[in-house]
Image (tube, rainbow, N blue to C red; front, side):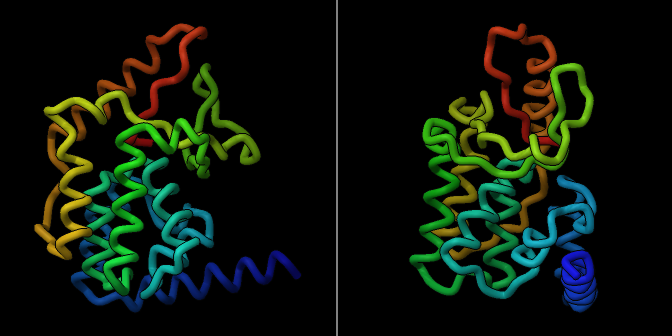
Length: 199
């Protein structure tokens, strides 16, 4: 019975995805899916939230942690939320902006906030069992560098000003994410893992 319920939910989400407006489908494919993989591979409750028209307080918190954990640049996430009208008022926009700021400042990591990491791997590169993929949302080592802090600042400005600038993923973001990924491989076992943005 539970399997059927999950299947029904996935079918409903697939229909919802198909019913997106053409420009929304393009934005979704070229921002979210390009960075995080096909939406069909996300947990079903995340799919439902990403495609909803309104996010409650709890859904905003859960979805934002998941997005930050799985490598979507904050600016693209902010633009998706604003473009779809998923945040009904200033309080909702400020709530998401504060979570993004806490991510940049390391507060999510300090308070051990967790989220499911889709492509979590063991130190040897093997995929972790599903039960071990809920991990602390770490702050990338480039979050506080002045050259790259605009990744978070632009997202916060988009949310606070309700202004979409149609940003694409910058070459600098990809470069920093790749460098962080390489740094993680080079770390010894006594250091905490460096978080990465790209799965």
